[in-house]
Each structure stands twice: as structure tokens, then as C-alpha cells.
Length: 104
Image (cartoon, rainbow, N blue to C red; front, side):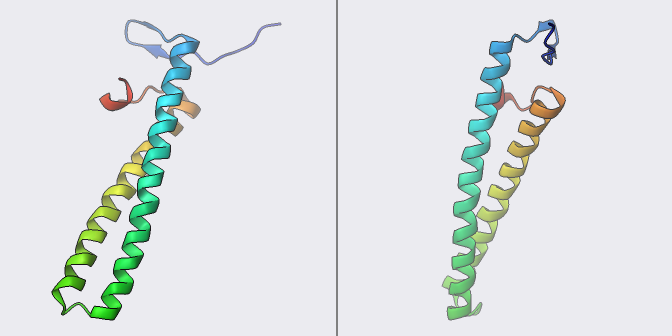
């Protein structure tokens, strides 16, 4: 009986199954971390929206809190999206991530 395991080809050689497992684990950890950061940013953004409603945008604290929360939310969402795409490309297509932080 022959089992087919997808083999990832890296420039200059083949990636072993143990390297694949290590890469998958790193990508999964990065994905879970990015998701947790995004979930926190989403909560903070919603709280800033509620604060804005209480203080109004004319109030400097409401405007500043909303601007900071919006920026943090956007950054966290983009990071989570990139982590999800890298993980999916690795699992579904067998493509090694191009991001150097994932290959360490």
C-alpha cells in the first residue's frame, strides 16, 4: 500500500515531514495569536464606539479613543487575515510562507 503525502519543494531540496509539521505548528500558533489579538481589538473598538456615543465626537477623549481603537482594530484584522492566508496556502496548496517571521 502506498500512501501519498504532499511533498513541499524548497529551493535546493525537499522538506521533510517533520519540517512540514514544525512549519504547520508555527503557522497555527501565529494564526491563533493573531486571532486572539484581533478579538481583543474588536472588543476595544466596540467599547470605543459606545464611549463615542456617550461623549460625542466633539469631546477630545471620545475622538482620540475612537481613532486609536480604529487603527488598532484595522492593524489586528490585517495581521489576522495575513496569518490565515499563510496557513491556508501552506495546508491547502503546500506553499511555504514567504514571510521571514514564519520560517524561523
